[in-house]
Image (cartoon, rainbow, N blue to C red; front, top):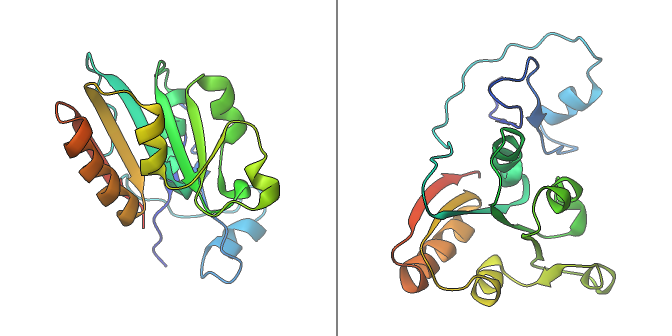
Length: 175
């Protein structure tokens, strides 16, 4: 059974660490969730090309759900002075929120369908991530790294073309 998962380990880590979204009735994530420490699994790859390219422009990381995984690896690798916008449907899907709240003062969590309780959480934007960008990111030239849902990548790409035309885009469709 072949499945794709994202590493959050750095290239120098002695252990592979993955970000895995547990789908209770999924084909493989329940197997992983129930596995005992030391259980053998065959791992191949990596297959992606979504890597960080240093430049003079400020990096803007934008993710939906588990698409935040590469940005954990980037930050753990020593990349600093970045802005992260992370969108999810519910607060419990804002993976690594507490980590990023400590890693950067420019962490924006966005809930597309916030409940009244979630809407009262500190530093939370209620709405689509493209709206959060419009409200919180001043015009300029940036390196945008987008990882996640195809719809978000399309929306943000159009927004970058419109408002940040001198910027660069790096994308990885997560699902």
